[in-house]
Length: 330
Image (cartoon, rainbow, N blue to C red; front, side, top):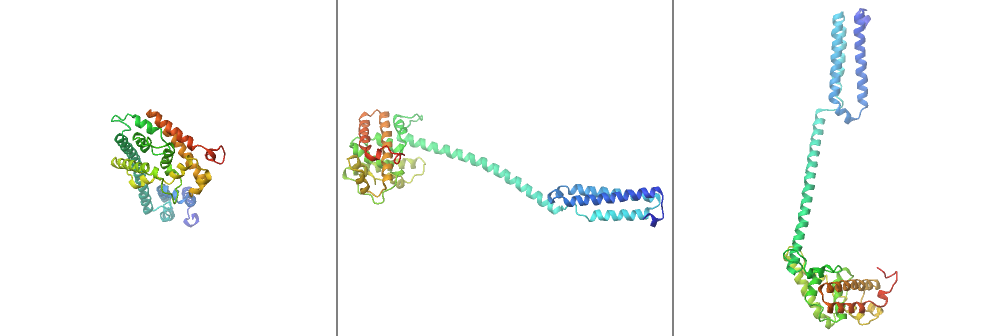
């Protein structure tokens, strides 16, 4: 260019050198920007525009300096070319539409996070309120059945219910305080108690009709269970009355009564469709309930009932069902 301009003055050479350096620096920055990821380019888009503007301004300043030295025409032309290349380049790959879309997504994300935090707090409050309401409803049941007083102090009937874990403690306490077991023999008491653990045991598909001597206490058991279910419902605890009563199935009463009367284990297996292991588990579970009923009778101070249940346990715990074996240990 110097030969074309016909000017070899030091000022012109210095101006052209500055112009060449600016063009080289702009090319270097452009190459570095192309190597950056798209997300980084969006973040630095504004800075790139500023750099491009400063580079162009620098080039224009150099061109103006050259004008003063006598080579303004060519220098301005070169500066104009430099400005044109800077204006045609995309600002870091980011467009106004892209930035607006990113801003909308970020705002949406922050809004959803705030809503999620609010819902989590609300759910915790609802769960706490629901648990508290369930406790209050159960307290109404206990008050209605006489297990606690109006000051929520546990009464003697409540202490008896607290001894029971193998069955529905509320129903069992109601049976104990109504004298349900007073007129039953030890074998009949054990047989009827099998209904109280039937919910956790395998059901007999085709049960036999209960013995005539066991039918009256079974009817009483169903009546008391129906009353307890209605108390639950009145207190606001959703309870299906029929389903609640059916939990205390009487399919094993004949089998347990026969066992307490001295039947062999083989006869028990022939009298029902249960597997041997299911029979053993049922009788052992019944044994646990009888122990708890003995503790409840002791808490009530009913020595006669305690002695009767003790005899029921003696009749029940015999032979292979309670043999010390790893195979039958639970």
